[in-house]
Length: 438
Image 1: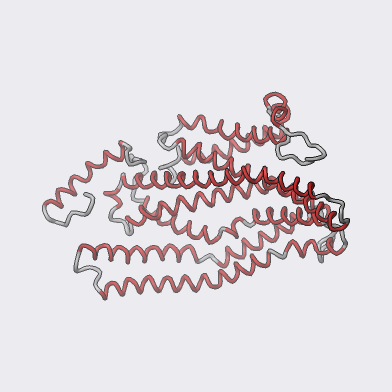
Image 2: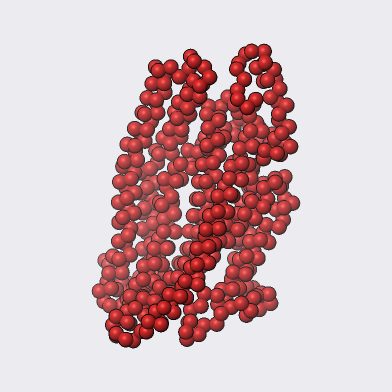
């Protein structure tokens, strides 16, 4: 699943974590000194003015973005020579870093937008409280400022979605021909064709989606946690508890933990049922495929039994999802009211302006969503576990030291064509009808 696409996966992902920790250490220790030496903030940074007190590209932000870009792509360089899977280097290594870089910049834009919302809604409150104190030009000026940020953001996100689609297809292609290099060993495994044709696609899609969501959640926490802690100083007290330092951070954390534990316990049986569901689906599909070429297969009574197996498993799955979804939707809907309940004493005391309320609500939502990554992704994780189990069972038939191709024109894959010669000889002797494509 991973070594078909990434160079030496265990070393690669371990090194990625170690490199991230090292870069963060450098940033917080000698980062300011490096900024004065190689930083481009003084060249491209925007200085705050009375007309634009919160520019997007301040000198500090330019240096931060420069450092993140340099750190990411410096990590890519040695992997061109490490490991024996260089065919997918530009996609698996450089492509992965590029996706993560885009996620980081999107989180930074979200943080800037949070600050902009505070200023904009405070201006609104001033206009409503004191008519005539805010001019139309000021409102249009604020809107044009955010437009300059959002238009490039939209363009980057569209291009990133296009890039990710190609990235996922390349990963699927690598897995497909990795497995096809061992087709003579794997063709007898239950649902072999489905696992190569469908599960490789699902695995790549789910893993990429979850990985990007996880990275986004971590980056969001790094950016918004200090902000929410600071904003929590404006919260006078929590209901039933009283004043607490960083109150909203603890509320978000407790809410997320409660939801994650609840859904984990309620949905504990679902991965096994999803796995079994794919097995009975594969059995029905296989019988129907045989029925295309053999008149004695897919007979009414046999098809009925296969379909009843599918039906029984689906009905069990529906029953378990019924109580899981009750818990899930009750939690998710209830969580929407948690920040309002937490802020209610401060709102009643008049301690929050409209802009500050928007900032706090947005920062709390970002932090809580990041904390409850597992709760939000639980149904996707269930699907991933079932796909992973099937592919791991599949890979158990492949020797660890086996030579594997990773693309349709990989010489290692093309060399396995010789293994089909005995099969073709048997077929020519009339043992079976020749399958299409041989």
